[in-house]
Amino acid sequence: MDEGSELWRKLGEEIASDDHAKIVERQVNTLDRTPVDQAYAGVGKVAYDPIVLLKMTLYQLLLGNHSPTTWHAEAARNSTMKWLGRGYRPARSVWYDFRDRVGKFIDQLHHQSTNSAIDQGHLAPATGALDGSSVAACASRHRMVNSATLQKRKAILQRLADGEELKSSEIPRWVPATLRGRANLLDRMHRAEEVLQQRLQENKARRSDRRKHPDKVVVSLSDPDAPLGLDKRKTYRPLYTVQKMVDPVSHLTISYTCEAAAGVAGILAPMIDKTQQIVGGRLKKVLADGGYCSILDVKDSIDRQVELFAPVSASGTTRQNKSRSGEPQLPREQFQFKPESNHYVCPRGEILRYKDREKRKRNGGRRLYEYRYQCDTSICNACPLAEQCLSGKGGRMIRRSEGEELLEAQREKMQTDSAKQLYALRGQSVELVFADDKGNRRHDRFHGRGLARVRAETGLITLARNLFRLDKLQQSAKNSTKATP
Image (cartoon, rainbow, N blue to C red; front, side):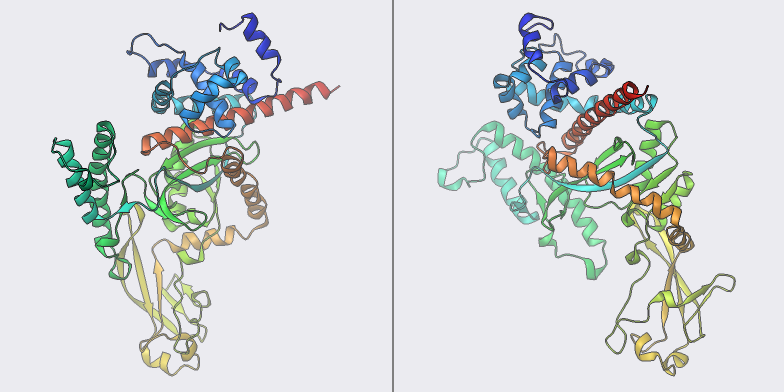
């Protein structure tokens, strides 16, 4: 079906101007298609225009359909898809191939749409609200294996790959029926072996009280790259973590990333750097939750001349033990630090003197000094608050991390009225974006396997939602202009 033909025109007349398909058509036509064409360079004549495939894909994502198989079915039976796709009916293999090529150009298209929104005045890049959310990997949480099981399965599959004939009773049910399926599984097993060895090394390097038994360290054979962690429903499963920096006013996503990690530790600095690259260094303030407010996070934001607005997590600075009476110890906040003399003063006025220091490992391989201050044992034992303050036989000890004064200043800043007013915008923006992705777009589970595919999928859903939101902002601006006398 040629664009501009009578059939194409009639189908278009049946579609409302605010329909998702019309929005995608308008917005994609404003993008420079060069990055998309470059992804197909050197492959001979392209049977289908990749820009048309992109429009059809973005439309399906807005409807909550993330499977290329569903895109294939919808192209044949959905009249709106026929109009948007100019009558294209690609095979399923074409859709899967297109999905695997998306990673080559999706970031560039996102940069274009973001800077277009800035140029039109719909996005103010000075302030960004940052948050992360876990998304389930395309892998079962019931079929994870440890090293011993992996080696046994790998040996069976390798025998079959080498041409050895086994009786049907000797072939387990988990073995794929086709040669191609077996080859793909064997490749994933090789990758799983690499990932599992790394996890075993990381587990061995942990403190003894946090170390797992080696048999409890597992990996997913469906998606070996996916880390294991608790999702929002507290279910332990393979998952990825999606991070988004959102404009708190327009609710447009400025930058995004998807990492093979089960948490947000150490992600603030890379997200600031990525955002600055997109907006040309115009980001000045970041609104985030307490997970992005460690000592290193505050230091990184200061080094980048970006002001961080995030509450200081109590668990990041204090470790409250039980006292001799069985109740929690007197909190550390009741002990006053004197920087000029480098000691603490307890509630009774006694001095906790500097004792020693040691380097403690932080995320990303970085290290910080931890300083220890302790009061004289005889003084503590004679104190009337001893039963509430002491946990052992020795005097009370306080630990202080290098750079803790940054957290103290951060805590004071977040108590000001101006900081509270600005921080209130965070929950009204970035959390709504994730709610829209998971609720309206049904993006609560990745369809592709492997880090490259889940990053491409994250980019697609982000671009789809940004174009949809940008069109709404543009139409609202036009209506406001018309209403103005």
